[in-house]
Length: 242
Image (cartoon, rainbow, N blue to C red):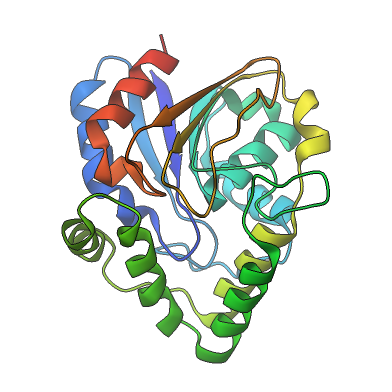
């Protein structure tokens, strides 16, 4: 049976997918097995977080079966793209949630996070470490339609982030520094890009990013629709893997 691999975002671990993974397993028990991956330095992965995305992917690659369906959320989306580039045999299909090949604005890339705000956020993490992560959770919840409920769910599933400051900074540098746009054409896989229309971190792209891709936008969702709009996410995954 195929594997559906879930890769988490910055400041979280795979624990954030607990409820979502349970729902996936229930609804698609005849289709694939769900596998949770912790990036280096997060959750149960005690390996040191490398300073490059390629090295991160090289560390998690041995735990991913060939021809997996790979679901990458936010930073996990960058990891999923790099996995498809470096180890194409591992990936049958990509599902990208609130993810982008380039997270910050460039001269020719304005549908992305504001560079100045990203730099300010990095400085806050450098000064305060994990304290900033709790504020980040609140920011994410505020993008959703029921912020108090969503923040409570985040806290229930994730608890406290156990990543140390070095891990947070290194993975943030990767998130803000990597640009995979030029390498996208080399990914000969079906890619489904899913966005929330109220996501202030990763705005929905307006055009196809690769010839084999499609874009779906969830109305009323922010950066964490797998929690706030879980049924819609499950539906879009079902459609993607047909």
